[in-house]
Length: 380
Image (cartoon, rainbow, N blue to C red; front, side):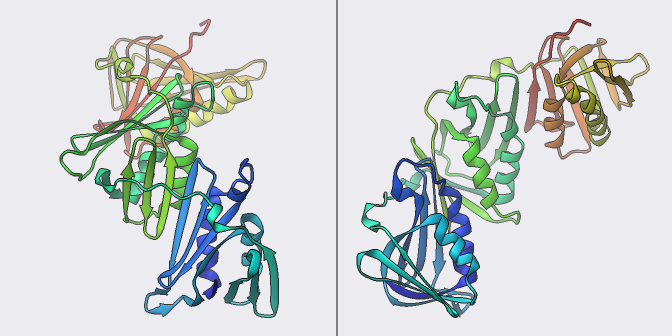
């Protein structure tokens, strides 16, 4: 194998795939990055068995030559060392060649580097997925749906399936659900798909979706998504991102979401968020994160928090709507802040069914994003 490549192109591809090189795998070859050079371009692949990322660098991009290929071939390079070396090379072009026994020679400007590679035949082959179960969605929408639900995944490995986000597709509607048993987030969106495309109980690790989100561009770009029973593949331009599906059955959470409320209020999202942020300061210092909310006869709500032996914070907030029974309720301020930060509308709806029943938070007038928080029982 022998080729010359633009440093910027190679470095960018390395940064993409290196997210799948952990250095903690029990399979030594997975500490490396596989390089395949062909007349079409250069492909980099990395995997830690949980996620796999492949980035393709075309030989020509925008009518300019990015790669000059002299001899095709493949090799596996030490991932971390190769990444650091390429980033620090002096010239804008890099010559890479592979000699006998997978010895790799790298030249850039006045720098000559040598390293020992591994046999590419020993590198695991990426799964081939049936693309009949494929749909496409905008990258900015996918990124938003992940952002609005990922904070509710569980961090406890005692129930692995709860460390992921549930994906369901039915009748052209994609739904995400996440829960850590103390709170719940759901987000739905209509997607253009084949009429018969549906899937259920596809659960993807929150950690892996976080890595995927970093690869997703903010601009309006279509992402192809292929779903199988054990893997999901995302095609983002010239990048392929594979993640395994978590084992286990996600619990049915629909029954715990109340459909009617004893108390309903609508208030300004930013004002309520700011008040909660201030209340959180005292609750956080006391390591309880507990704040209290009470409705008032004049149509306002009162948010308060107390830090033992240090002080108390109370703040009143105007509502644009307040109807139903009076309510006094305690809950985790961090959970409420996470929910409010995910809401993009100017006003927020909050529904209560009693002091010890779930709290519902959603954009006012919006049904596609919903958060549920379980309250705390307190002495007062």
